[in-house]
Length: 112
Image 1 (cartoon, rainbow, N blue to C red):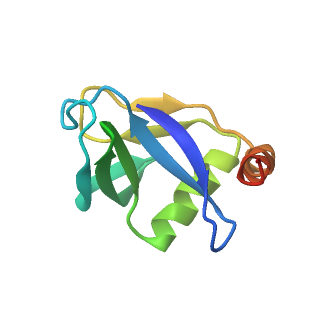
Image 2 (cartoon, one colour):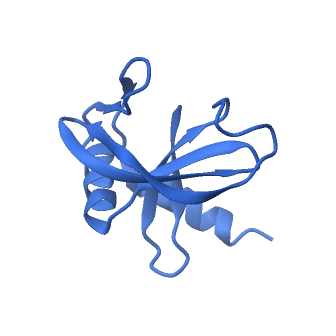
Image 3 (tube, one colour):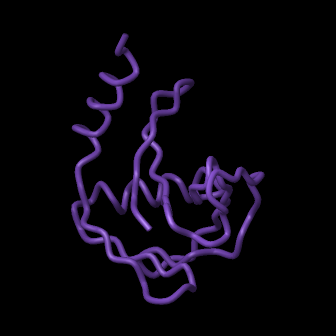
């Protein structure tokens, strides 16, 4: 599973998502409607998530605005982010700054 970022075209907010390119729930090329799943533990805080499949890729995002803000804050803090989704082992991600990410996403949006 990997962390990724997207840009909300309505609000220009950066959204952090979890992407799993090899999850068995999503058959190769399959789409699955978005639905709520049990909460993930993110740095010791339970956060409700939604997940769905797009073209065979499992995507999970916080289900609430508060959860999205919390995950963004944790990632942008620069401190490591530990996500325990209840599968195998907890996932460890380095923190980052969202400013450069936001700049790249804006640049990609305005590409020809």
